[in-house]
Image (cartoon, rainbow, N blue to C red; front, side, top):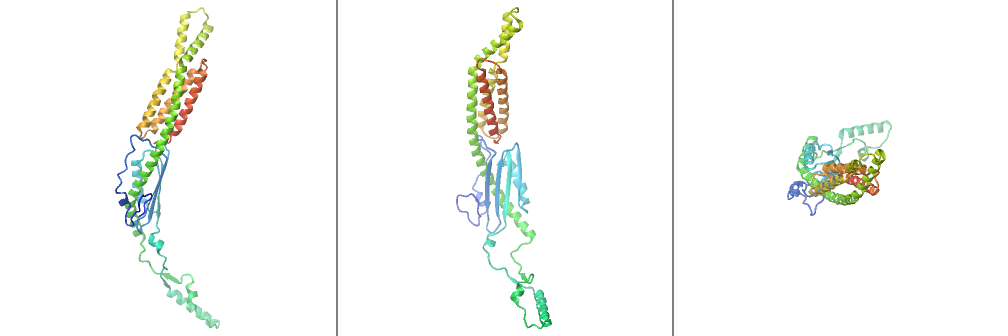
Length: 345
């Protein structure tokens, strides 16, 4: 039997179960590792003269677990086990599982002997009789040539091969092969797929962490400009109120109303919530597991805070232009984060 990939030669008489026996059962995803939904695995096995099996898994991102199985004719008995195992071991992703079957055995590959044949005596007798009748009719002296006769369609019959199975026997043999080999093949393929998904997840986590650093930098810069912008907002409102109501009204009341409106335009709450969301995002990344949907929800909340920040500081002088630039930069980083998070399990 041959199992790919392997690190040592595999005995001819071993089965897939024998090879995989030393392996530990498929472990659940590490609590400290986050996984991508992108992955690939391919495992092959051949046991003696039995047909060779190859199982391939391809995984891409999907909101839920979406399984697509491609099985060869006659391998339907393996479908229920494959579906159940994939559902148990994988949480999200579009999974394409392909099982191929090479029915050419090693014996057939190496057996180049001629297939035993013999004349169909009835067909040969008819041919000889017709030949001689024609020769007599046309007064010819020719005799039938057996070499030429052997080339005529239907003249030779093949001896039955005692090794050939009936259709029912062949299906029973295939079912037994699938029941014996597919569980081990599938376990190995899932292990390979999970290894690749974890490796891709680690790379994505590093990219996400860098984007979070840039996002936090913009938040810190906006926080440094907040007091200046708030004062500019207050002055602008005061001037407008003075222009509308004149000096006849209570100046202190006007200033109080201006202060209240300026406070409503303060972005401290948005900045505080943004910091909280970023900290939660980092905690989910470090915690690992199936965090993709939670991270996507957090990014929706972060985008909402960035929109509110831009709305509150629109049209205010005294550094608001830079705050607007930072707010737009926040939204750009959030969008980059969302694109990457779509690939996380």
